[in-house]
Length: 101
Image 1 (cartoon, rainbow, N blue to C red):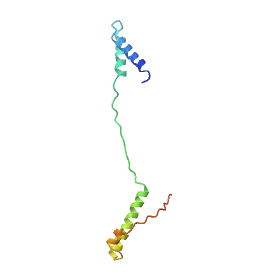
Image 2 (tube, rainbow, N blue to C red; image 1 turned 30 degrees about the vertical axis):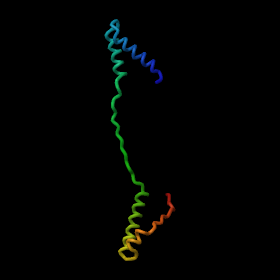
Image 3 (tube, rainbow, N blue to C red; image 1 turned 45 degrees about the vertical axis):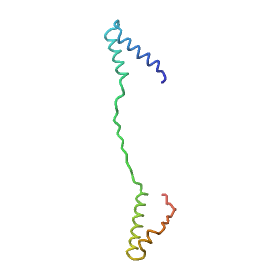
Image 4 (tube, rainbow, N blue to C red; image 1 turned 135 degrees about the vertical axis):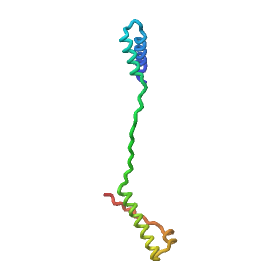
């Protein structure tokens, strides 16, 4: 730590003044107060942290698309157009065109 020797010398000086019987009580008291104030351990601070998770519209769009897709699959199964096995075994084709607004 830079200047640690100077800091220690200042502490030693204040300590010596505090214990010097030739110094006035006021000077001794000021030295003692200086040591107490400057050597006090750091106070605990309360930190408030607020974390918000915001859903972007992309998540809502994806959820709506997945629900619509699942509804169509159920509708086709109910109508007898496809079987559950066919739906489960079918490949999911994803269109990679992304519309970035």
